Image 1: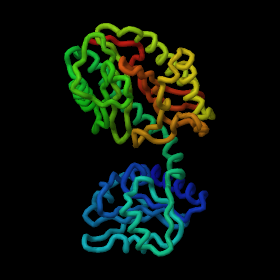
Image 2: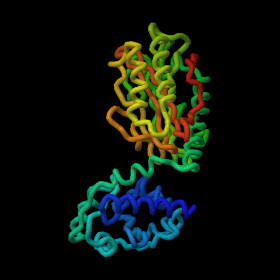
Image 3: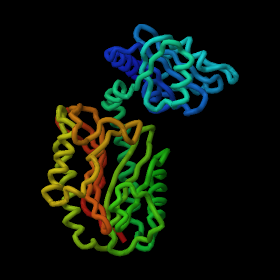
Image 4: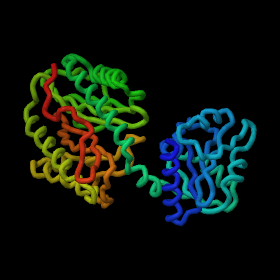
Length: 364
């Protein structure tokens, strides 16, 4: 386990060195978890990992947090330094960092950035996202397996909820059922539950309201969370007892677009070509102006991360990348349809991690 984290840190150092930087500064968040296994609390108290060429990794932590840091899975090989409440953590950081041009992780609080700049003479801080995102975008086998477990748990949650009555329930009732099902099937944390019924389904990020679901409604359910630190994200659209007028044509177009995008995935294919594959199907069906978002986003330690399947992104896909494929059509005042799976790029194509049926499901 520790060797995996050591290799990640080595690749991160190589990336910042190739970018002409003197090192990398990492604060609590997914990047710190990726590099050390330490899930630090994001606090006003400074926690800071320094990675730099030709020197060993060092992490500064509040003294009260040192036991938790020392117990992290990937902390072997990282020298720990601590500071005590009442001391100036930025003065302590100055002695570890030194002068130069450093990348700082994107989620670092502004107060930490500004205080480091004030405390460390001659330091220049730049965003680390471009250096770290490509490393995290390509998952190893264990990470893909973790994402597959999360996807399977979300699949089963959908199956359970689809067997429950919808007619007469509120969107919030269904959202609560989804959250409960996700937790019962292994999610430690539920990240979101979107339930858009009838006209509310035409808003892609509607959330959930007190609207009562009725016979003839289409219901968009987009939900996910985290299992073992890795994310799930699935969308299925169901109908209550019968489809509304015109729904089946729209559903068929979205279903075909999702399949076309999946079939476009292969190593070397630019991200935007997967988006184009889905968009072409929807445009031919006459709904091009009703597909109003990108086709997908990466997923891993965060629900949204690199790579993004969107026009203009020429990044080539690589085996090990994992992302959503989620085309949709949204008809204001009527209904929406979205179908979403998480997929992984393989050596010769793609693998679906979500296996819940994509055929139209009728609920009670």
